[in-house]
Image (cartoon, rainbow, N blue to C red; front, side, top):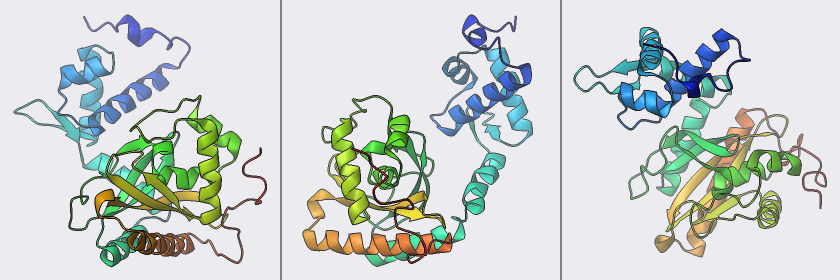
Length: 282
């Protein structure tokens, strides 16, 4: 009883024991964070580990207040300890209170929900948002992940990366097709990123959700590196050229305000953060 399954042992023989334990614990924490009313059996199956091993790790996470368990249903959920650590991400990156203030102001100006996303490998993760009345008010959830190449926020950040870095992040084509309008080819995406870099904002034209069009602009630090992106989503059916121009200008102003808070100055650092001819090499 309690012996690890073969799938738990494969590929782990050369890892230190403490590293394996930490890795397993973080895997369970990530599973709980993604939600779905998971019980011990659900979590152990998803992590390909025995229930006894999963229980031991979950009890450790409970003791440190990273997860909690509903006594009546057996469902595990994220607890306050994980929230405290997650909140420190924005604070330590200078994106906390400043980001909330900028998003709130933008949301009030446009009467649209606004979001702040960061790039994590090939995905974006929504780390902050300001709500507004309307059908899109709850579309992007805190912690939600989407493929970077299918979103305005992801493309806004990728546009300021080296081409080789984009290849490393995105992997081999074809890229995942989220909707029929998602760009899945490398050449088409690189051309789109060049355009984004020149005009300073990105558009998601129903590429991550049909019927939804998004505008995003990168948030830069003092070195001109894109640390995040501010985005606004609109219903295609309610959009007009005049409305989109208004949204683009407002998003650019908001991104510049938050960038200034991170030390970026338009006169001191190029918007791209690197030489104009060195980002995309044909």
